[in-house]
Length: 191
Image (cartoon, rainbow, N blue to C red; front, top):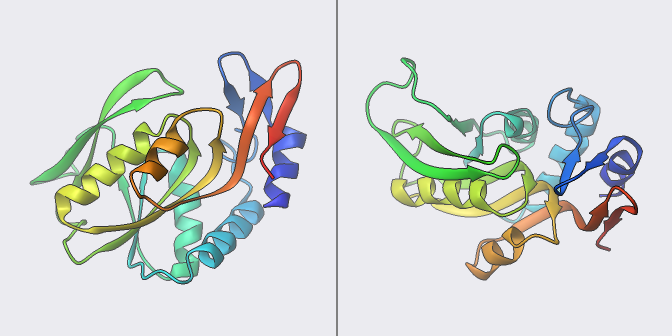
């Protein structure tokens, strides 16, 4: 998606430790016009797939998932990183290691919102080591639902996540795949 790549080149900041800051338009301050284009592109990529629910993890994926859901006309469910009084009853739980935060979270979804007849598209902002996506896939599996695929805004192609997830037979569609990035040389996208 060339529009996204241009925006990453213009406003993305590469930090040490393979960190790409895109918080000025993607995961802190959100560019809704860009999100609309992202949602349209995910709809185009998955138009051949039956989807009745979108799943993401809090917090950065929620905005993208919500805009995308408008194009599929389906609800969004997001996995929470901590149990609150708002989550009553039984939950599906999975452990997820955050690349950015360097810690392990228990992510959970109420059993009220994931059912065996669901056909789910995962939407997330980043794919690095694949832990978040695998955690969400685990929740889907626990529910007996069907994972139809994953739409990722930015994939760090130089990290193992995308390869490992695709080896498991999960369909992954990434809008921008970065093959190299450094503070010295900037960002190199896969064609």
